[in-house]
Length: 373
Image 1 (cartoon, rainbow, N blue to C red):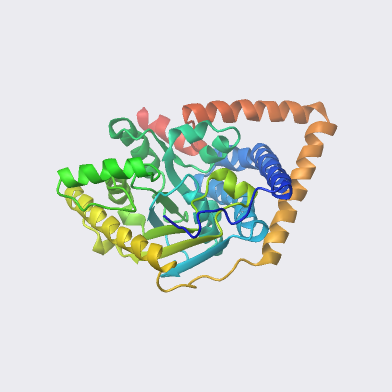
Image 2 (cartoon, rainbow, N blue to C red):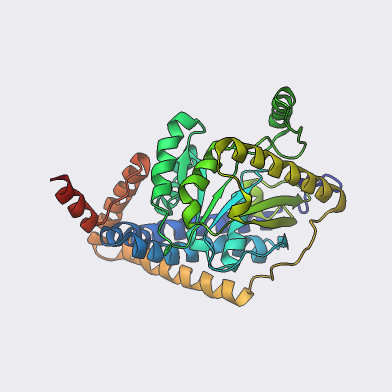
């Protein structure tokens, strides 16, 4: 959802923006690669052989630092205003997030909220499996334990149930985010959604699509006992809806508005049919909220979160850049064993991401072997 003014970008793609954006993209790729190979592999694979809990803590620390580069890019370099409204996310809660899906980059702006709450390395997404094939980033999604889906429930259910079963440990912080619409919003998809709604006696929505409930119900069913709340997040943009490259070059958006509603689990039904009706009603309310945003230019009850600390951003950026520089130097200018190590880790991450391989702790494997006997 975006608020239009004169229909133009907030700034043209000038040579300076182009050079700056390409440099930022290069830094993001290089830092991602080095953090993955030297630190991500150790945290998500080596330590995982001994403890999933401590593996997640190390992985969160490493990738939380890298993911923080994105809010730094959005808010400090590109000067995009991220404005929060509604309720505040309570600290230390294990939560399930549902959000509207307006564009390909909605999910990236949830990082701005997660960093403010100290949960940046613990946020996980249910996302389309094709994104796991992205170079380097796909490896990151795998190590961060994102859940890949093909949008066919008969195929996705087993994958989702298996992954959800590993998220139940209350010691592990968890922000699990999904987009119940199942795809990003376009006018053509909206027309099809409205036709389906009219034929099935559902609300005809203008700014969101009719949500799909099976994945949401599965998350609730499997995690209800270990979750603290569901948070309904609504995202709106000024003045145009951004693409990934708009974010990189700082062309759009000028403002991102994020409205947060906390929903206690007791307020959500348990049966699948009732959950489906509840979710449709929730998106009906979200549609009205976006309609008001379109006319008023903001959500109600703004300024629930403060601005990011520039000093904190710079210190984090400096630390990540320093570690990346050390790893880059070791890879290209020191012993050949560093090159062999990097090659082997790349081969492992490629195959592990493709086949969705996640090592189990040695003690769990031994226990399973003895129980099998």
